Length: 435
Image (cartoon, rainbow, N blue to C red; front, side, top):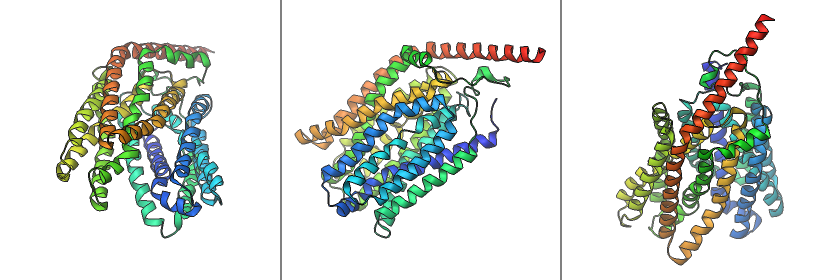
């Protein structure tokens, strides 16, 4: 039973705000790092351990959140996640010692892995043919959150201190917890699937282990899981090392650096909804549509990055143009991979499926900065960025191509399962009506 159009877009607006502010809170620590290090008198290694702790906690919690979302009400759990975000950020702000700061910052990883329930809820508000656009819109928050977090930190760190910045973002998390708790309705799982059109009452399906284990029997899903491990390598290499590369190896001063990164991030943000819209467009014509767009995105992105890094150091204008073109294509896979995962999984295990995907990605996320650093020490950062990004994107294209071969069968299987459920619901309604 579909929700009203007005409420659906209210949900999108709330979740967009939640993700934007949460990403800002999560990423602003990079800008606040010098202030935090000065407060506690710690080394770069000790500061690095702070981020590592949050990543480890987040990776472990992915699987827990996935199970809870598929077992219980997602809207209320998302409100809890927002409350945890606010509370742990406040605890982080009041930490009196480095050890307390380390522990409280690690605890912020609990809510960092809470997104699978959000995406699952959106799938039950919007049907398969438009999910890519919605996911692409929501993923705008990742690059925009990076920018807003950086701006917030730069503007306020010397005015109210890094603790004051955390008080602000933590308070926003608590406020959003109330909005989500009281404002977001829990839709029936699978209610927007095409087969459920006209079905008034839908059985509330919940997580079950047999259905969860069946996820690994889907060939397209297995390929996407493996792809996810390699797919995060470029993102983390760029996130950790690209600013350093621009400064040390291309000689960028502060102003050109900020302009270049701001333009690239804005174009990158546009790539998410564009990739999602293209995926939806092709998906209406072929079940392989989303993975075709994903394949094109990583291949073109790899070619453009290769060309970008070969631009002469003195030609900053051409470098900016090439970097922006690269930034437009590389997000294409993001919303389409999530949509494809949901295109082949039953509604009651979608959060679990995405959590498994994110858990596997966490392994790549943790490994990639280290590999890049090792290559950079032996050769250069340009070599590290180029080799890792191009090689892993080529691998991703390989997995996307084979997943595209398998996905029509897995989609057809889901459609058959949902059709059987719809017939069952109609039969139950007919029996109740006669009674």
